[in-house]
Image 1 (spheres, rainbow, N blue to C red):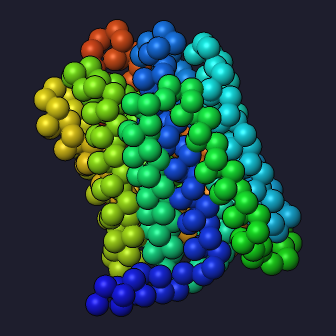
Image 2 (image 1 turned 90 degrees about the vertical axis):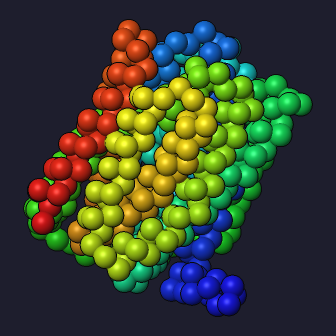
Length: 386
């Protein structure tokens, strides 16, 4: 019975989707070995709440401009793989430099370079996944990709949890380069270009993006202003008395939940209205924020880390599948670029506002802000997109 479930899970997934899932698996092993330790590393470099908000917000926002460019240009030339390969390679190389950073402005520059690599690859990669998948299985394909991505994150967090007792942060950052390099090799040799020749069309991109897609982006923008960096959730656990190992264990719980339900959530969105699943994700985030605002008990904080994983499982793959539903195939890269750019550009004000509220008012204000904005986004999506 278990084997039949596995067969059904991988049904209709192309070789490209499977290989890109493996690439993301090893990339996230590398990334999470670093990312879970970064908020703690920031503290050792003297960074406060505002500085952390600036680092995370600027890195995501400025680098996000690459997402719309790479998506648009991959549509224009009819190729995806060159952008995907370049982006993964750049991110892998940037990770080496975390080990030699001595000030938080240096970390900001390295984080920016690493995010530029992500911006270069993300939109063409998502378009390549959609190009390689039957339209009835978009949710499954993106759910599988998120599950592989997050399974890698689980391994990365476990490695960080084990290694932090024996190695310094900087030594762990160096070790994290190895799985990143492996992911690039798999991408180069096993992922195939699937784009066909580009047909000329006199309509502008703006006119070819449908009304529903544009209205969806309004809700995405509002939610993006709520979706501050995960670093503040880590800081909440740290301020409540959690040790480094406990914080990593909480983050591991988040990733386990994320990986476990990404595929089921994607398949659910293939069977019911995708908009409903996205609204559910917004409301889960709002509930999590209110819970973190109201408690300082580590047991409850652990539960909210798990809820954060549920939110991510609902949101990441399903929103990307919804974009594929709403736009034509030959502007898909551009549509993903615009979608990811909005998420990136709103990351700066979201994380900066969260940092200011954290440092100059209190952590409760940070999470109340997130809950209010996420609830507003859910309402807008319910009302606007029909």
